[in-house]
Amino acid sequence: MGQTRSVANPGDFAYTVKQQADIVRIIGEYVTLRKAGAQNYSGLCPFHGEKTPSFSVHATRQFFHCFGCGVSGDVFSFVQKIENITFPEAVRTVAQKLGIAAPKVQFNSPQEAREARTRGLLLDLHEAACTWFQEQLRRPEGSAAREYLRGRGLDDAAIGRFRIGFAPESGFLLRDKLKSLADEDALRESGLFSWKEREDRAPAAGTASVAANSAEKPAQPAPAALYSKFRNRIVFPICNESGKVIAFTGRTLATDDKSGPKYLNSPETPIYSKSRVLFNLHLAKEAIRQLDYVILVEGQMDCISVFNAGFHNVIASSGTAFTEAQARLLARFSKKIVVNFDPDTAGAAAAERSLALLVSEDFEIRILTLEQGYDPDLFVRRKGAPAYGASLQAAQKYFAYLIERAQAQFPRTAEGKVKAVNYLLPHIQRVSSRIVRDELAADVAQKLQIDSAVLRQELRHVAGARTSTKIAPAREAAVTEAERILLQALSSGNELSFVFDDGNGQRQVYNPSEQAYYTLSSEQLHKGLRTETLIDSILKALAEGADLMSLPLADDDRALFMSVLMKEHEPLSAELLHEAIGALRRRQLEHRRRELQRQIAEAERSQDYVAVARVQQELQDVDRALRHAKTV
Image (tube, rainbow, N blue to C red):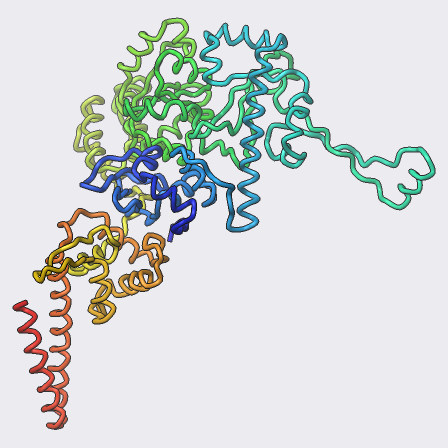
């Protein structure tokens, strides 16, 4: 059902944190939310790809729901799912965001505890390694690295901001630094080290007692010789969205054949997945939100130089191959992007795949093409920030850029125009909106001087074969207004209670939730309705004091429940609830009336006149009740 379960019980730490947390603010750190009603906020769901917002957050009830993929929950389940952490870790994360001191974590299972400990230990190791690399850069051994960074235009402030460090030539200094923090297994799992297994060692010659012991025990393999993966390299830390160091990239300072690759990256670990991380997002995300667009460059030095020049909404991919997970991550902040790497370079195939993915995800793309021989880093250093800003302003829309490429690549002959159309059609096909595709067809036809009708015919043919992976929103089942009101009342708790004078000088408390619970439990007015199973589940949960937001509901029932709670309705009052209960009573009586009429007809056919008289008497009672119900 896509639900991440979490429980916060009155009196415990999680409950205290939840009472103080503003779910709109917490989720707003991950998802761009826009007000969509008095209490509702909406945005693009971070848990599945979608073109239009189906993700809603309710400010008063403090929960979220996606009408596209069906995921829902409270502030803890959101953080738990988006950070891929356990419930106790999610509680601590929210507490840290609120500045609340957290007690010792308690986990639900030994496996959960082990996984959390592993992640926590690996984060600690990476933080310690990062600090150590920074210290090494300041030492005499780091002079060549400092000189290189100065040559790339980075001052001490920029080096400190990006926490750039230096890994010395020795492969054992980092190991010796970190071995007090973790055992060898954890050091291996961190991705910071390489190793070579040694041969099994025979017992050393020595005393008789040693020989005796060796005769009793088989030879043991010698421990692996761990050594630092990063040696004689400038080290750039890679951070997650929260700013915690999770991996590194090392740029070699050596020039000989034995130095290895120019850039060396950390391997995948329990805290680092290359396809899910965007370099510098933790520093850029607020600027991306404010400016509502992102600059995407290819390399980390490109990213650092552009950021250092004052363009703080810049990020870098790990190479040019953009992934669906990265696109979804970025879409939480903005769907407008300026791509500043050259699709005609060695990474052309990967660049084209990235751009195709962004088109499919409905990003508004512009292409920034710099002068021949310039990457963003060199351009900023040689020509300055104002020139780069002017280039940003002049960035072309993606399809205008593609049309220009087609015009340059193919001659303006009849055959060349056919080739240009065939080149452009696959790109246009990726656009999800038929209206936008039609507009692009007109633009292509005009610029290539091709008959618009012919081109559109080709487009229609291609679009007809287009497949879509969009998750269809769950269709909302038809329910009556009375059912909606009762669902609202049942889920309102004490928030809608009020005190009134009963006319006899007595002050009374009216609680819509209690009134709805009592009426439905005693009269079973919801039987036979679309909401029967949902209301039964809610009544059971209220009787047991359970959290309604954590109910294990079927997908259809959950979608219906969230739809009722998320949408703006007329404020609930005693009169409105009374009318809803009356409507269901009349419905129940009318249903019973039809059943009695059927029984009378059946009894008459079988000539059972005693039964006819008995059922007619009951029918008269029902008719009186109906007349009374319609006048109340």
